[in-house]
Image (cartoon, one colour):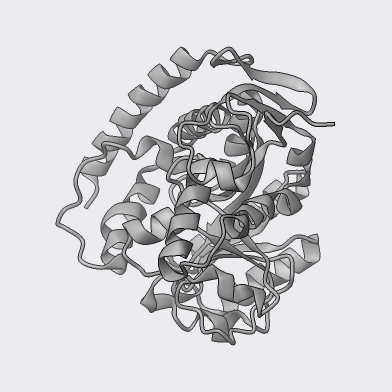
Length: 349
């Protein structure tokens, strides 16, 4: 019988590990007004500044921070147009070195022209055919041609994997359902869904990222409505760390704000859906510093932290430290990498 102090390893069902180096980054050229400008002035500039070494240290730091909060598996969505080839292997290898399970995808887009889209597709195919675990990634329908969307969906079907894509996060992508419905399959990951209509016809798991949606002021996805359309709901962070217990609490209070009868058991089911997406994490064990590891207690109990984390039977976190790697070295190297990233950002147009 499992101890009340233990759970399986938690799963972050949508992450951007490269954002681990973004904290403290230089201010954008001007203050963004709206979601599209947030993408254009912050995240799409950051993507362009990445190289393979920066990707490695962001993934090392992000994986370390996963273990600190009992997250043993991440489903990552990546883009680095100037360092595409090999990027997914760098991320997967860094996570494996720390002791975290990773599922990777490269977000294909036509923002960098047809050749950029081709390179993104090639990186997904290279990684998956070499034995990597993951999905075929699409950035979002609104940054892709129909031909690119069809190519990504076709590649995923050929490889027997799903597609990992942002869907209707902002109003600019409100037409995503119409463009993707005929392509989608039950093994797709549909990220955000804020502006999806109730009758969207998309197949796949809807991944709710409440903190990110609030931070970007894109609205509330109302994820409870997707039960009626047969879409499982999971939880992600969209790159704002890996603290899935905290994301669960935010998902609960956001749900409760719109429905005072809502129970924390609903967002706990969303959190638990991560184990269906990364079933290996069910075999991991996290021993916590809190005995009542159930939704009605955890919804109102911040500060719960792991004391011991086992992944596939190996202890990878104990006594406040990782066992495979030197946390101080990772933090120091990541801090150096962040400063180099910031200089590269300053040099961008």
